Amino acid sequence: MDIKADILKDALLQFVKLSDESPFSDISKYLHEKNEEIKQLKNKKQKLKEEIQTIVKEKIAYEEKVRSSLKNARTTLVNIDIFVNTRDELESYGIHVEDIDKFARCLQGIRNYSNYDPFKVIQKFSDLKILENEIESKQKIKNDFQIDIKKLEEIKLDYETRLNLKYMKLKNLEELEGIKFDIQDLKKLKAILIEISSEHNVNFEQTKMQFFELLESYGTRIALEKENNRLLQLVNILENQSKARDKNYIIKN
Image 1: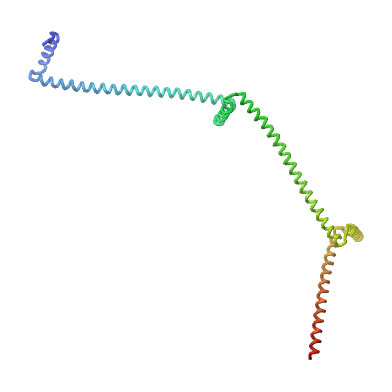
Image 2 (image 1 turned 45 degrees about the vertical axis):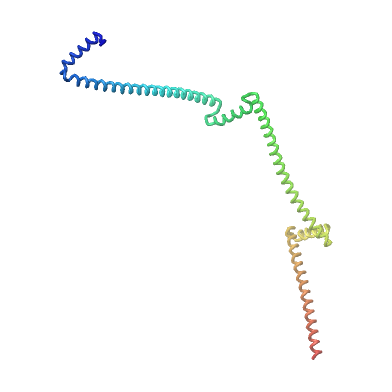
């Protein structure tokens, strides 16, 4: 059967040992049970092997996650260091964290304009400084002109007021001349009023006011006399008409 002697010897020893533990009639059952145990052990071994593989995979995944976390942590720490250093550097130039957005836009403008060429930037800001000085100078000139314009407008208003007064005086003189009352007559009238004021020891303004009141009352008197004359004429007309009717009545009768 091509069985080697040492294998056969071991098998016989195991068989003798087995026959000592169980009756010969139960050997088949015993072997069946042992085979079942072996199968269960193999199954358990396979499960353990699978669990080990799962654990190994989980370990690898966990180690990868830990490495990624450490890498991210190192990256975060590096970024924090960069941020802190950048913040400290900017604040040393008076640029606070709140102004970083403005600073970034400023740098973007510099890059777009000169591609970070410092000479172009210096030239640009030099031109801006000159322009700002010119604007400030022009603004000062503008303010001076506005002040001058305001003064001229005040002078213009004063001249217009004085011109209106002159025009009113001229208009009044023309009206007086229209009634044959010229400047000489006005002077005579003034001299008379002054003389009256002196004689009666009265203020000139009061004398002048009373004079014009008398003129107004005189004008009213003339108007009343004219109205009275008109009424008298109307009465005469009515009387004549009445006499004429009476005469005609007498003739008819």
